[in-house]
Length: 325
Image (cartoon, rainbow, N blue to C red; front, side):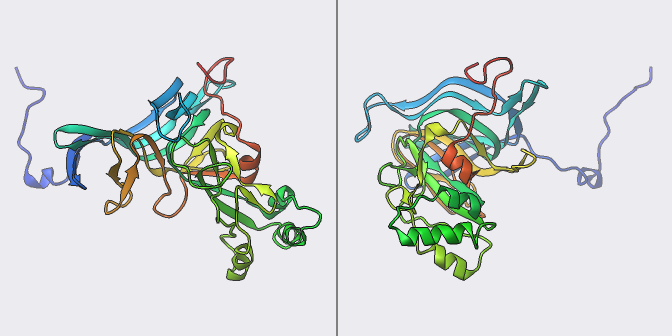
């Protein structure tokens, strides 16, 4: 009988032509008095999931309403579906990992993170604790249509005329985050609103220094800018695009980096995966991190019209219901 396959030794030259890496590896770290163990998964994950009620950190917290949670989202979903075609558009995750923080032998934190993430995140958002970075963009013509001036406010009328006139076709931008309303102060704990913080200004990214100097004369104050509200309830947004969504093709062209969800019994400084020399402080309890990318762009990008009018939920259930399946 002759062998149909047999093992043969490979030369070093042949072995050098092959490279590879295990899809799982374990790393350890220590800083700020804590030690960390992390399981890295070299995977690309496509998922479309629905959760009836996502509630993390439901306990009494000073300064917060009784019976509330750090993160409370009903009908939570990742990804979307198309009933007409039966197609599923998954939420895409690259290089997920699970990390545990220890103080001595005691576990004080757990985080689940993603090297990259892109797709629709949907839900009836009640409260979020964490860091959520948003870029808002749009033409001056639309922005001017939302500016509301008292009849006697000549400065406001002048600004509205300039934005809707000379800058009508210019692309404006503003940064937003979790805020209080009223107030416009940063609100990283059980926030119900998202918008421009006090002192935040509009900009024209492609504009001249003079253009942005003019805009710098106006800033958001107590959730208002030139008579227009700048803080909005999270309940207005049925779906958030995580990553860069092309408004024409409705395809995601880039991913958000450094995204994670964690729970900790004390404030924990997790190592920033975009810049490992830096740390992200997660407050005790449940914490969601949707940060700015290393290039300065936000994890979520949306238009001024969507900011003012809300974002309808994408369909996340095949069949009649659009949510809750």
